[in-house]
Length: 235
Image 1: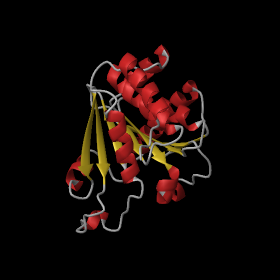
Image 2 (image 1 turned 90 degrees about the vertical axis):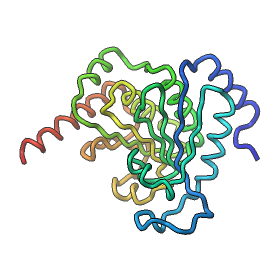
Image 3 (image 1 turned 135 degrees about the vertical axis):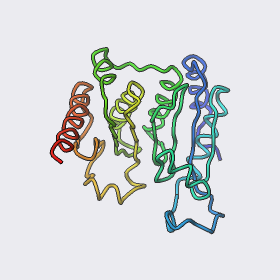
């Protein structure tokens, strides 16, 4: 049974036809249930939504010749996963002509389907709709930033936070932006005290509740850099 109905497929196909410019690679890490011998580092992990995520990506890739889907087994290719910084699954990495650090952890269903489409299109175009002042500030960043946005599929405000984070990762090669589907990773929900979504964690030091405007999001990204610099200088 297909995940995308015909109306959604046609709307997505038209969107890709008009908005995709350059090829996009979707690098997908999954777990095949038939694999029984697990590395110690990943023993005991399960991926209840890997099959659905793979099917969604296959249906999406079939809608445009500009989308290339690569499927990797997280267990068998664990060294490759570690090289790319993938530590949980299902994981989707969205690359354009550049290897942008746009990542989705968990099944991008519901409202997050739109976030996935937005990431694919922006990676293809190699540009964002951020304000000029935001782009200038992001391009001056000189230290790594890790943004994690916790979401649920039924949250109408979550895409705003995810898309802001991904847009910033396109503008700066030092930014990695992750969408994390909260219900699929309860250990992270507990770690970061996620009681509502969207919740954004920046460099482990900054926590944002709810969807915030672009300028507020940027302020907190820059604040995280300042705090990291202060921590290093105090050592």
